[in-house]
Image 1 (cartoon, one colour):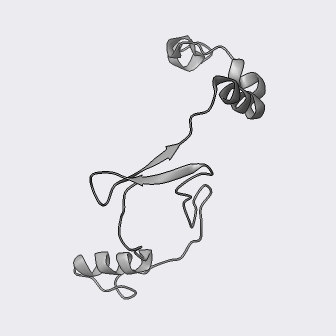
Image 2: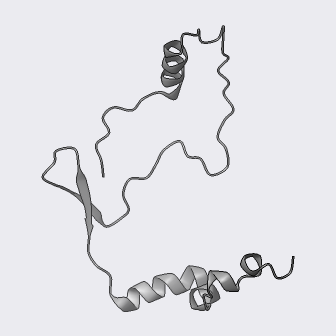
Length: 104
């Protein structure tokens, strides 16, 4: 994980970019607030339950350390949400109809 410093407000960043381009915010270029788009988040989860942050040789770089899971536990985790998909046979990309031109 990287220490990126203090958070930056997107509005401040937009204004600075407009001004650096020699223009005036809200006069030459409007700033619109359009809300969150599908898949966008206001906050990002940086770690998960059971992970610990440990330092590295660089003061602004940390790493996550967690206890390894048994193979049995990993299989259980992947089979639960995916069901049949986890056991599906994965073919080669050139065998897909889009890649071979078949079905066009």
